[in-house]
Image (cartoon, rainbow, N blue to C red; front, side):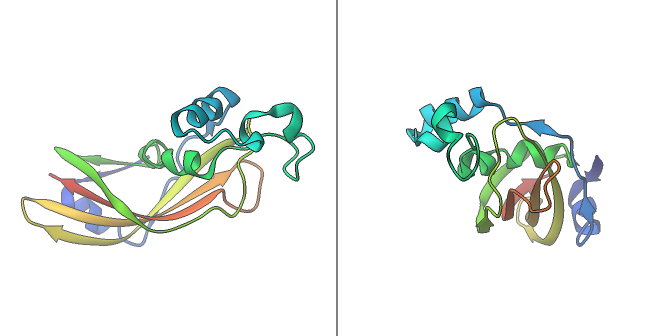
Length: 151
């Protein structure tokens, strides 16, 4: 894990791959909980018996579940020291090239592409986050994520 200290550390990391972070297993209980939280109970996510006959060969995580893991996955790839407050500002682009089969492990690499100074000792950070699936060539998710960190 790379530690970035203050806005200076963020700016110094522009263009470098940070990570990859630690592997994280996506299990059926997490997928079922996400389905309950979002009211998205599509069978490809929550019915292991039926999903065996799907093109995926088993249940898969919701794309938005994979996306919701970005803070955890990114934080295991890089750490911002000295942050007094951080907020999600949005996403510019998100793609899900490969589904995450239940039982798979994922991890992320973060590449900071932009860092813009904000008032009140803040910095707006645009990061490309690539979530890979262990053993597969295509990533689960590629997101351009915009956050704000205040130091």
